[in-house]
Length: 221
Ligand SMILES: Nc1ncnc2c1ncn2[C@@H]1O[C@H](COP(=O)(O)OP(=O)(O)O)[C@@H](O)[C@H]1O
Ligand SMILES: [Mg+2]
Image (tube, rainbow, N blue to C red):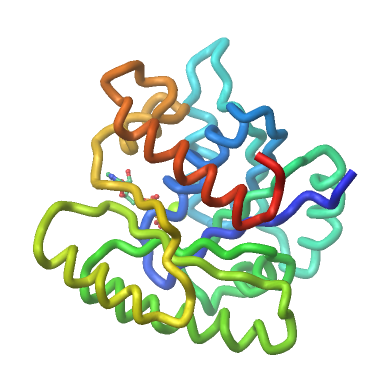
């Protein structure tokens, strides 16, 4: 069996949507029959709490492991989780200087950088881009993509999205709009797929995101 790819959600700021994208992606991949293991590297334990909020009899569709140990211990743990996973998702702390973020990037195949289309998020994304590009010098297998998140139909958002196209890292062809369904699904410990037809626009976005990520990984959909 091919080695399970590692997809890491990183950003320099909290609130960009790392945990939201991690959990929706996990649920979307699970719907496509993938065994997904999520690793929560953030001391805030958002991904772990999200899964723990699941309703009785309706567990979150991927296993979420809380990892708060020393970064040196990450490789052994990843090797263990990899045995049963088709895909591993790493949800990072909100800092690119954090030792666990740096440890995660050492093992990453695809780094996904959620970007809220605002000037401040754009500025902090430049630092993430610099880090990824510098790591690529020694790890050519590392890829990074920007994913617009919390997109609203404003002229500011359009302007920022246009600037994003000028980054060295590619912008994924799909995005997540600002939708209450994303926050609602955290409250029930599930995903937008648990919210019925009212959440259909969000479900379609997540399905498109899953397809784009699968394509990036070069894994047969
Ligand atoms: N696309 C979205 N639409 C609406 N709310 C969102 C969206 N993405 C994230 N959020 C909300 O923004 C907040 C921060 O998101 P989160 O995923 O926790 O970010 P991070 O993990 O990067 O700190 C949460 O309250 C979450 O529900
Ligand atoms: Mg988070």
